[in-house]
Structures are given as C-alpha cells and as structure tokens.
Length: 77
Image (tube, rainbow, N blue to C red; front, side, top):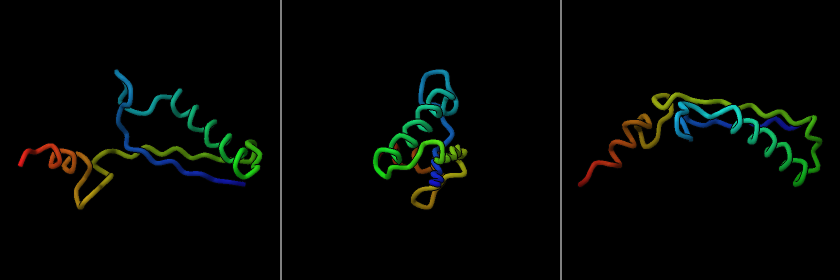
C-alpha cells in the first residue's frame, strides 16, 4: 500500500486562486495513482496520496523564509 505525501507552498497557481485548486489536487491524486500503477504495478485503490499546503512563511530556503528568500533574489546588486 503506497502512501505518497505531496508538499507545496500555499500560493495561487492560477489567476484568482490563493492556493492549489480542487481541480489541480484531483489531477495530482489521479496522476500519482496512475504513475504508481504504471511503474510499480500498484492498484490505484490501494494508493494513498496526502496533499499538504504549507504557508510561505513556514517554508524556508537558504536560511530564510520563502518570502524573504524571494525578495533577496530579486534585489539588484
């Protein structure tokens, strides 16, 4: 029984959305189940996908929260 955890930052990926949409999540759930069936022969009925969205300030990179890291990257000089 595969258990797959997907973590993404909580931010919109399409105009007007402030988080991953239900349609995007459904496509990810199906895509992961299909991939595990195709590659490992796992029954999609036995595949669990956990989708977690993390607030930007709770996700860090390079010693900074993502908003600060992005701001630093966009600073000239």
